[in-house]
Length: 131
Image 1 (cartoon, rainbow, N blue to C red):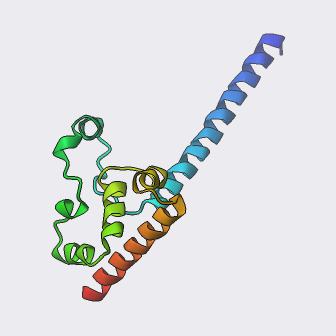
Image 2 (cartoon, rainbow, N blue to C red):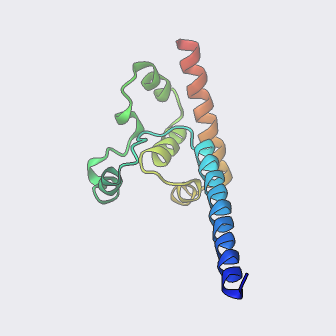
Image 3 (cartoon, rainbow, N blue to C red):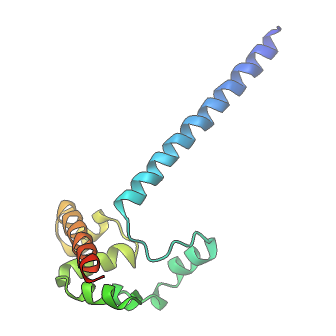
């Protein structure tokens, strides 16, 4: 085996390992994001809808309750405190992360995370008890 073949073989092996480990890391990040944000209003991965959301934010109502079509979920959402409703609206309608929401509301990131998870837990329990 000459030196060029050895270099090519090592390069191909390096690229294969690079692709393999990057795909594992991507999957870990995707699963972590999905577990942190279990409620999504729009699961459409279509690029056109993403561009419309980014560039046409005026047409999207900022309140979460304007997007809810299920009556029991709407009633459960109305029973939440105003701050939790606002956090859910900022997180799931406007797509902001906890750090951005904390900056807007003037509270800590941990407080936002705690209230968001508490609100989701309350919504889940109200819906399962009611249904």
